[in-house]
Image 1 (cartoon, rainbow, N blue to C red):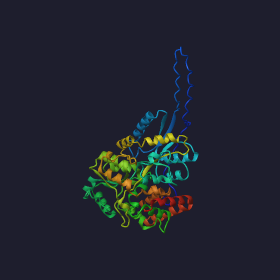
Image 2 (image 1 turned 90 degrees about the vertical axis):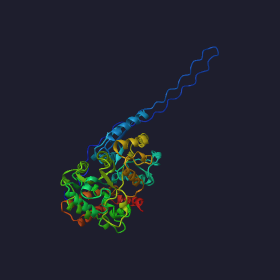
Image 3 (image 1 turned 120 degrees about the horizontal axis):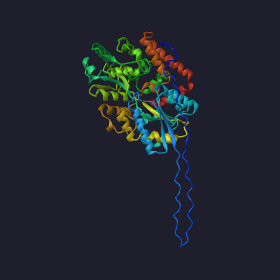
Image 4 (image 1 turned 60 degrees about the horizontal axis):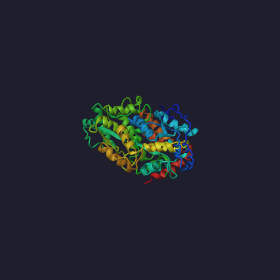
Length: 472
């Protein structure tokens, strides 16, 4: 791939799954019958006629979702939840519409443009969801789901908040961090209970891991997703707060993508030059790369909460361990003491004529029984204070939950514009193929963000205002 290319074929537009069912509403009750006349004293009194029961017409609510890839077991949970919901709400049926990963964003954008489509839907956090909030597409939930919003940490609900209104509720958490194989670390001479705290120490360990025949760091970039996943644990680690990240890519207060506190590219190049990645990095995709870790072939990998939980169940907590704070490459920031947090989201289309029924369905998914069942089946944790920590199976999950509820560090792609993935792909490919130096990668990142700001003045203004939520 030419690293100077302006755009990438990252998410193919697949055929949009349409919803053609007509909107239905609750019918009014029929009038009660007139009172029976008073009977003559000598006659037998006839029973008064019974009032006709209320007539309720059926309503179908459509629900599109994705997540089986990173939360294995989600599909069965959705099907079970639909059966239970429909049993409790006989007049409402839920149309189950699972989506392929590459269809999530195109489906939303198509519905946003035509103002019709699915009633309730899954959405990745980030620029597209924000566009749905800023440009229309997501219904306000402050009235529709008022009771649920009381149980969502402000840190999480504020991410989908604009002008005082909340437009999406968090689904399951997608914190990202590095996980490692304790046996491989030990074989390479490291103490698996004390993983390297610095990047230089991590690289030295990876060199020893190579000598044992294992892959130091699992990665597959054929589908390009991992190009933005790989920097996640490290990119913000030398920052004082998330607002500094906004300053760099928005060009605020004299900062830019060439500022030293975001110079991740020097260290990414070091991992490439030291051949710490799989030989097949370019020929395998994101999940194929992760499978190298699950198969015990790779020592470490960057992944997300539900997948890592499923691995710990398969491999055993005695075999793998977590490093929420990535090995630090700088010495000025405090963000490295936190975990990169994120959450998937659920929304209601502002075009839907069945918003109340859709809200009732989404609220049902957040009941304690459904949250516990979701965790049991997939390892995913719904971000809600009604989620009982006692359900968690491992000590590291308890620690992670506390970080999710109280921390301030976000996954970079969730607080960046649509050009962020393009930047990561161009720079990784340029560095990997030897067509860029780290300095050129930083300059390329700054060029991409500068051009984006010039071409999108209104979005730049919105991001600048939104960034105020992340100060401190």
